Amino acid sequence: MTGAMAVPKRSALYRRRLLVNRFNLVMSFLAMAFGMTFLLWILAVLAIEGFSALGPTLFTQTTPPPGSSGGLANAIAGSVAIVLVATVIATPIGILAGIYLAEYGRNFWLAQLTRFINDILLSAPSIVIGLFVYTVYVMQVGHFSGWAGSVALGLIAVPVVVRTTENMLHLVPSSLREAAVALGAPMWKVILKVTLRAVRGGVITGVLLAVARISGETAPLLFTALNNQFWSANMNQPMANLPVVIFQFAMSPFEDWKSLAWAGALLITLTVLVINIAARTLFRQSATH
Image (cartoon, rainbow, N blue to C red; front, side, top):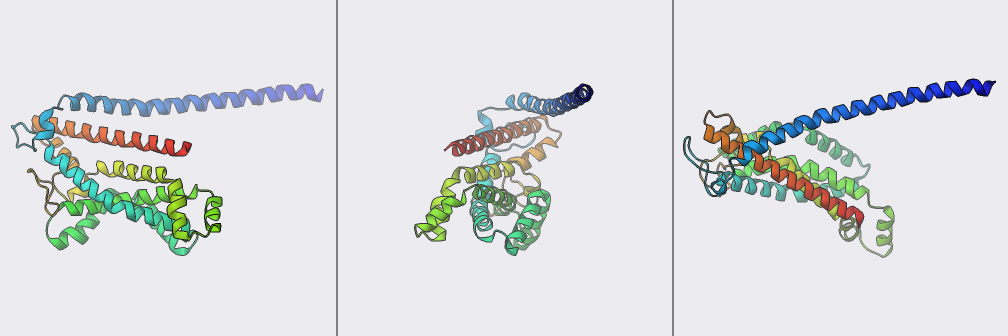
């Protein structure tokens, strides 16, 4: 009798759990569809407006005055130079800091403080970084420059590289370190030849994600590199860059400038997309080996 009464109770509980499960699945699907709808909408508008402005002159001519034909050659070159220097600044600092946190610091108070500061920098608004570099660098030298823009973007990229490097090194089994130490290898050689080599794909992925993170930043460059309508390879002077050019051209009343802004936005989007695909592919290949 007791067993017969338990069956309906169990059946009711199962139906209630099934109902809750289906409700959660439907709500999750609706939330995903809601987000994907707007994402695809943005990408579609960007593709329609951006591809119509693409052409050879976009890569061969500099930013034009209103009413004239031109391109984004100086802005593209400036962005590449600023991001490249920022990557050179951020990569060694981020990797070395990540190595210290994962291999040496561990639970030491300095490592905990470093992680806390790194978490703050990860979530800090980019405009705050730009104002900081403007105060400590631009105001001291008295002019905007590409170097200042690279420093600002480098400060944004460092926390990403630090976090990724530390997390990747934590995935290395302790047995690999112990085996290398047992063979008489010093700690620096263990890190260089064993642990870093084991996760080099993940570390490179972190660097690529940092590059994707800083490629479209506008606010820091408004306070540091500013802009330059002409071609300039001098990093010690104001330098053209795609994010600021897009911002200025998109806010203008001139249709030819708005068309170039759409093309620049499409270039940045495609660049970030390619970098993310490369990073994921590299990380997946490193995980399988």
